[in-house]
Image 1 (cartoon, rainbow, N blue to C red):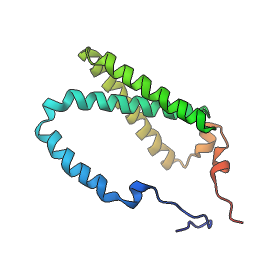
Image 2: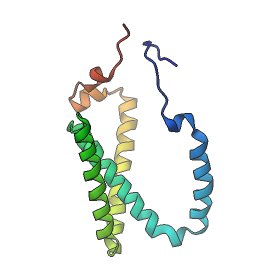
Image 3: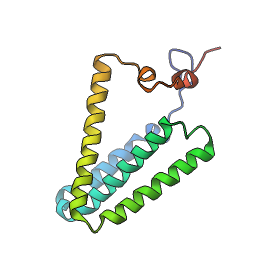
Image 4: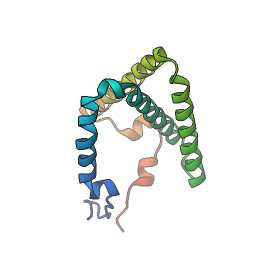
Length: 142
C-alpha cells in the first residue's frame, strides 16, 4: 500500500487483525456490564494506571527523550514503575481514587476539546509544539 506521496504504508498488527479487538469487546463488555459494581474498583485502578502511563510517555516524547532506543526503554520503564506505585498507593485510599479518576476524566476531556478545536480552526501540530519533528517523520519520495 502507498499514500499519495508515494511512501509505503506499513499496517501494524492491530490494523491487520481488527477482529481481535471486536472479540475482546464482546467478551469483556458483558462481563463488566453484568458485574460492574464488583469490578469497578479494579477497572478504575487499571484506567488510572494506563492514563498515567500514557501521560508520562506523551510528556517524555514531547521532551524528546525517545530519540534513542535506550531513552525510550528507560521512559517506558519509568512510566510503568510510576503507574504501578501509584496504583499500590491508591489501593487503600478510596477517596483518592475518586480524585484521580476525576483528574483522568478532566485530562481526556481537555484533550478531546483540544482535538476538536484543532480540527475546526486547522491548527498545525508543529506550530503548537514548537518542534519540527513532522519534517523528520515525513517521507520524501525520491
